Length: 409
Image (cartoon, rainbow, N blue to C red):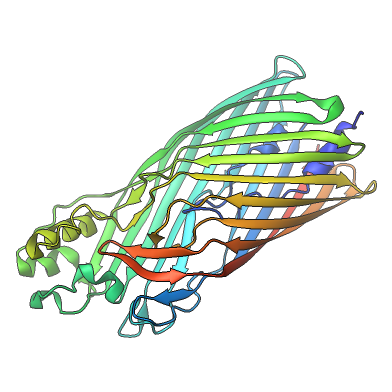
């Protein structure tokens, strides 16, 4: 069996969505498939996710839908500089979160305001590949990543910030806000790929390093500087930045021709979320101080967000060239989640999904591809720093859409 290189490339280009909704804050899936395309290549795409995530708070009230819809773009340029050297530049938004409790649920609201959070990252990856022959490709490079975040905590679910009998802190619960300002840091990427073009066989293994950020943060309680508010009860906050680490990961991608104009594909991804946590500077010191002040040792060392299990995910499917201008694919995916119980800012424990993709190629050098995936989201117990069960989230789902254009030159 022999598949033409262009035909195979067309089939694989019908896969515009590899991530969309994954464990913890994983979004894009960090694919480098564009860099492994033959010749010179450019693509740009966008993915939109609309999730419905709701549950019941420990107060017995319905939370309402807390999963805000979001989108993230991607782009890639690959140049085959010589027969043996290739260069690529990839843009994506690998990690993020967007949550908002809008409904008047006492557990997550305060004076009509709801809990919300948004985490945003952007990656620019520079890759250089060496191909000693037609089969092997060894590649590596640098990754520049920017990160920022905003969070607002409301309601009795977060009463550790003021729900103890300390009159100076306002009684039941104080609104807490944090603005973690944009900051950039560097990481690295390395991998290797093997291919046999005649049978559309390709395998690649890619490692990305963790990236450590120190974000300048502005934190307030009830609209006032956190340090000033807690000073009323004798707590002192030392100035500092918020440490955030985006995790290391490994992607394994496999594909092979299985009949004329048809390929099977498999992606397996591991992300090192176990032990990953976000603990804003003032937040951490307030939690420790309140724990010591009230004798509640469960608060000491608590985090705003934390994960206790590594994420594993897999996507498998079949792509087929239907005609000279049309191609399509079907896929099924699974994600392990990153631990349960899990933060209220993303109360989902993994998923199953099914996907469909289609591609139209008006010319041999250009294409437009679209895809859709439906997700069955895993049930999860939500927790906060002082409460291991503030809500149960069950029977939730999401739908994702992807669109991509490409050009070979």
